[in-house]
Image 1: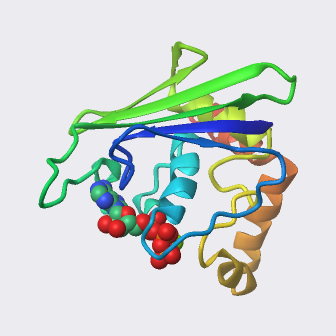
Image 2 (image 1 turned 90 degrees about the vertical axis):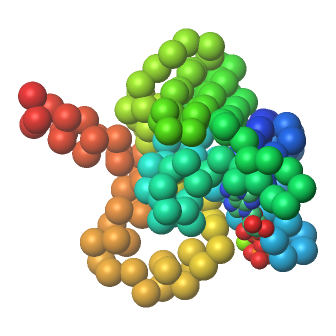
Length: 174
Ligand code: ATP
Ligand code: MG
């Protein structure tokens, strides 16, 4: 899986539509404190289906929507679009949009899909929201102090088998 472009609108501090092109060789994002580096990484996780408010540094999911400032009103929605290629080298466009009080909706290549479908797509490609390919602030310290079970989860994500657990749980609940 390759990520080529990220488009954000109303997501956290990215109130105006913004675009990040991901060129080969990009390994890090630098900039002054508070400029939105962590928010960018969180946008990638979020469009991949991340639903834990803690890993979004928020109280509830609506907190990812631009909250407003003294001079700008808050937004009613946030949208992140991830464009790239999947493992079969096919064009892939994943969109997640959240509206205040109304939850999230996902689209893959223009088609409405379930959150689960998006999570599985990325988990199978070993690039899911919890993938070790995304190294966020504080992550290195977390890996060092992780419990064996947590470390196992990281390895499973890296190996691309995390999606199997989701499918097993799903099958067991039927
Ligand atoms: P550092 O170098 O300190 O790690 P950073 O570049 O990672 O900084 P971020 O944490 O990505 O910065 O961005 C923080 C900024 O995003 C803060 O100014 C915060 O107010 C803003 N922010 C976060 N959520 C929202 C929101 N929902 N609405 C508006 N602004 C937000
Ligand atoms: Mg940061």
